[in-house]
Length: 341
Length: 109
Image (cartoon, rainbow over all chains, first blue to last red; front, side, top):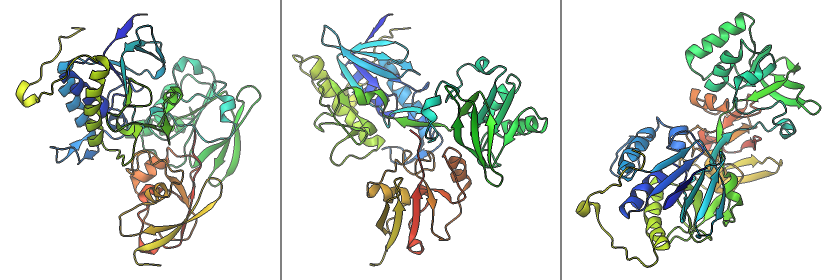
């Protein structure tokens, strides 16, 4: 496996991580971003791309998705590298004293400085709070459908009312031996044509559609054998099944970062506001993931934190070099030559 | 009780009742109130009805503004949703909510 090298390894490609590339670029520092989501933007693109934001200086109003597009454009001259759809798992120090990060897919990135801009953490599927659910994980319960072929000829129960629940119901209807979709009300929030297709499949008897119901219990020895469904008016029923796939969206979790030896209070990383450094020299934390007295979780504040942080990172990387501060109005923006043209 | 203050009882996930003094003149909602008292409510999305981490049950008989379609949509991502389920962030504190009792809904891990 090839080793990627950079100056600042940024964990999290949300607005703060992205803008940090710009400020680092002005100091001639290169950045590589890692994010567990498949696209840059963090919660802005994942949760609320169409929501207007009103407190970005210079923008009376900007859509979250638009802000990310603009940031991507702004940092383009500095040719940032991206590793997306991979979660930052472990860090270790190599013989040079650099950090080496390994992702969930085994990608390795080496850098003298790590900036954690992880926001609220990495997005993971939301798991139903059924007491014995962990016993059946990968023994009949999957939170993500990786390979639909896996379900061919099987009995499957899907729960949820959004696009992923509807889309997978439509996709799996023909290949499973029995497919049940459980949803808590009669309306669905997914795309209208998907809703119609699901209704048609139910009418044709190709799927069992159970609405106004929720999955409340799981049974089985070694592997999942049946689920308990509580219906709003008809009480509790049990359905035999090989698989249960709860599709209730994603929610952020701090994840592996919690195990890196950083000082953490209430799911946030403690930093020194002088330069947003953590208790580990060379590791910084910026944006929503850090905490300090008076902390405000604002994009605006994250931009400031990233800007201050790269100054300190420069001194950490080049302890003997002198850094002279330059305004972009004086020097303009000089980008880097593209690595992978 | 001073003007602009009401009492709201929040029952946590261990069934412990917390009687909270809540201001009605600060445009605060139940999610923010719980966070202000350091009760275990995440409020991940910041109150946009986009995450369901402030899912709660209204246990008193107060007449509250009906849930919007957005709130209903987001309750689809919550667990153990009942007829009295609401998102705390969509319940804005008002004088007529004095004596409100809510219970925090279970959360997945």
